[in-house]
Image (cartoon, rainbow, N blue to C red; front, side):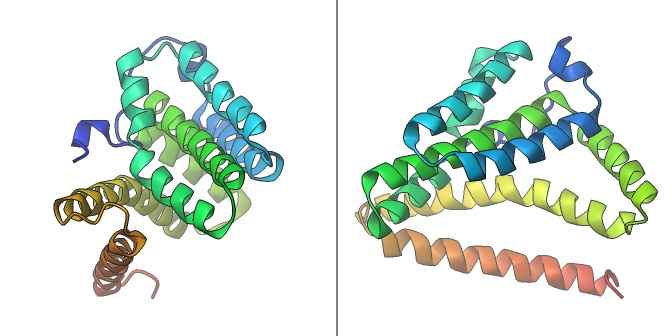
Length: 203
């Protein structure tokens, strides 16, 4: 079971570092650019290692505690292993490793952002930028807030299903992992949608 303290995208760590001092808007733009570049450029596993190494350097520059960094990186493994197994099943081992490294680098970059930036500061900066562009601030901010909150929950869901699958002795069954995760994800999405509809969001 993943402990709440190990869930990515959840905890701000105060430090005096060049990464912490950057404006939230700049960090958001860098994160988006990094994710896009990783998606396009990481086509082999060595490139995936380079992308992941770049993020690790960012953690070092941010002067984050090693135990926090390791805990954040390891917390993504239930999801990454699932993706890796499915990629291997559909393709080959090299493709699976490349996919896992690319996703791991992007996830680690997102963790670096939230570990060095308060959520309130991110939302305020995003609201200001969207307002200048004439984009509906409330809707986009709500969507981003829900995304940041639901990603850790999804990690916990996968971890719980992995524990349940192990207890049933079905560690190697992809179906025993995929079906419960999909069902619980859809159920959560419907509950959130019903709650938003009850509050008149989107009317």
